[in-house]
Image (cartoon, rainbow, N blue to C red; front, side, top):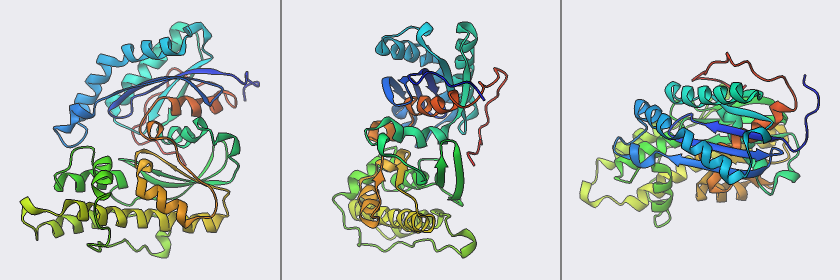
Length: 340
């Protein structure tokens, strides 16, 4: 274990796990001095999803400019940093390598400690960057919903995670993207379906909800739901799709599945609060339904911290910095890195 570190640590973190090139400086694990994100959404929209080789090349093109902007906005120099961190995984291998190698190079050149951070842990720590952070107590339950992940974690303390369940097939965000595509909505599908559903009837079509056996009590499944939507759409004239009703009905099925499993786990483990994190946690229907279903606090980050960003990586790195030795500069990326 490391000796106690100064409370107001200043950490530069890089996040390049997928198609966002991000750099941030965070002080004390909670105060965001800068948080710069260069998005590739428009670049990948033509493919209807992220094209890995294109993503990694774009990271190489912009990462130094993103770091420079983050440092300028933070009004500090590299000598003012306590450590440097980067996302180690999970994610796209080519994209992860860009961020990790640049971060390790900076750490070596500036003689700073280096930490490789789990991307999922970063999402969990996005809540520590909000005004609600002083009220957070353990144990708490985190529902992490994004394009690649739908996971339930019991968190008993900093760095102590118990994986209760996850998706057995498509992640919720992945299902949103695929259904959005067949509905003719723009990429990414999550925000597009959220907007379209606001004007639709959520009871227009009753799409199936996955029913799990006891052995998969906290797990999720969205593949069958996605297939049901695609099959149902075939009954319509492509030029006369009731997009708003279909979007609202699909979204209601996803939200119901997410809420029911989360409420079950929250009651079973008697947690102090439920945290919603990840890109899909910005969904308005999910936030409303979860807050209505639970009597304990339901917290979620602002939209800017729901999607991939480097501030959340710095927030997670803060707790690693004050509790353990730095990682070796030989540390490699792990595209399928697990959290618990």
